[in-house]
Amino acid sequence: MLTTREMATVIWLVAITAIALIKIPGLREPLRDLIGTFFQPILLVPAMLYAAWMAAVVWFAAQVGVWQPSLAKDTLYWAVPGLILLFGATKVATDTKPPTDRALPALRAGRTGRRSHQRLARKGRWRRPSGWGGDCRRNHDDPG
Image (cartoon, rainbow, N blue to C red; front, top):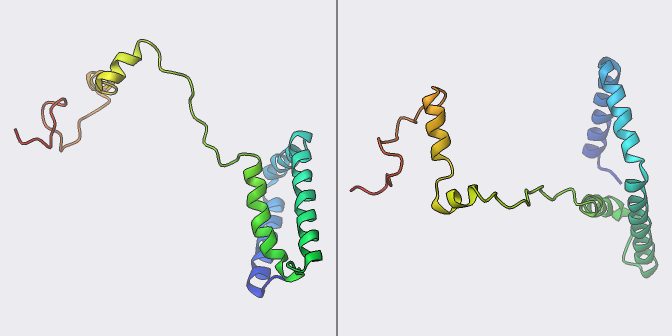
């Protein structure tokens, strides 16, 4: 059961969404495309299997006596993040390609950005920050 605060939040979200759909005509078509994307079999089949599994777990827990209808909201708090994790939506895309043979010596020597800064400085597009000394290669923490 939703509390009064949660019910008010739901009402406000529905009202704001309805007003946005009415007032912003360019919002309807992308929203229709987004909803259509969710109903693709590649997304729908695993989501339905997950929902069936969650329903079976809840049914079994209710039969054993450890789940009550008052826990429905808490069950959703656990089920929705599980659905998000099921599709790997929390993974960050990484570049798995190895660096090129030409870039490898520069990476090993620690010269990754100096030349590009010098090239931009020659073109007048990059200026040194005011705290930098004259020699970029020198360790500025070293007093000598």
